[in-house]
Length: 130
Image (tube, rainbow, N blue to C red; front, top):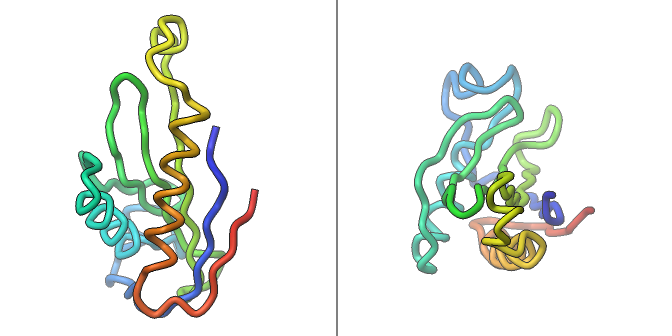
């Protein structure tokens, strides 16, 4: 289950030419995802990769005992409004063995994500959505 959605307004995250060829037309967020990855690393969080998805870009934080990632993307047809949220998915074995408290880990990552995006360059507005 995803955490709350953090929304920021900033023009600091440039769109790379052809970036949406890896996602879907008009779906960006690579610069935001790279920023989030750098900020998470600086706070001691493991980061495995920044990968494209249909909706934008994901920061893959780990896969064991649960898959953890941060989803990043732009609002429809906007390149100055960005969204990001944390997702923790425990596989069948993880749920069965109780290897991770999904709700607690989602909340922890979402709280950290909120700190990171609020401190992003040039932020003029910040809000959260469910």
